[in-house]
Length: 406
Image (cartoon, rainbow, N blue to C red; front, side):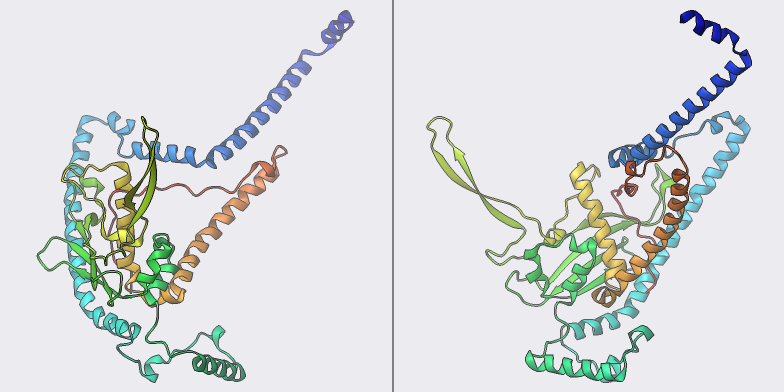
């Protein structure tokens, strides 16, 4: 039998053997490519791998390329001249942002009377007139006369059944609960206190003073603390770093300070008491020890970690400050100017619409990729999973940039 096999192989045309080998290599190559694609998809869906990749890419930022090293010395000298011009541009840009800050201060004074009137309506210090309460509904919201009359009767019936509410109850608490960034900070024991929050104001630093802004939280008298005002101040910098001038990209929040809350005895929700049992090593007796430990609360916002003069922070403190800066900036730029729209949810819907537009573009691209994968005979839809969003890392400072359009 072996002789016959050898005979058959000897009778094959060498050209035929070459064709067979080519086909086998081609098929093997397709298998390898298919497995490589599947492996790549699986890797890109792994958050740990993506985080490691992001860290690696971050480490490459600013790394010199081989191209610069290959340039003639005379060209490198000219590139250095361009860098010096770029540094001067960064200093001009810093001055630009300082003037933007001055402009913000100017217009903040123009907005404030409107925000004060908003506060008066919320806390029932002012009752708006019929004319001020008129609001033209969108076409899709317009109702027939019969539906309007029915709704009016039902509202009047409800008003008769309960007491007339003063102002707009729980206005700021509702705003906080409607915004994911803020609702994540809220605990159940925070809500009874935030019902007493009457207003939030933004105050900018005085002319000639270092750039900063403060968030002022105004509370009506309550049983939890004696303060009527809680403050949080953010210090900013708008100048290029001497050691890294090219990293300048607008004002940065460099640090923040909170305030002392004068809690009523037994009402400090930022602390909790726990009991632990301890067993004596020698006698074996057990005793109960009471300890006071930090408790999760929105009001920890007013006691941020201290930033040492060296600027060196441990990883946990840096993460807390990065999140703190983002929240402070968001309250300043979005919440205070548009509070009513976050109360009604309209601002949140606008934010969602923005994300939907990006999602539609991404869906189109994914659709094209899916089409290619389905044409692949080795494609198995069971092996694919929804992709994780590419991870991002918060820096220890937040770019202030331009204020959003009011």
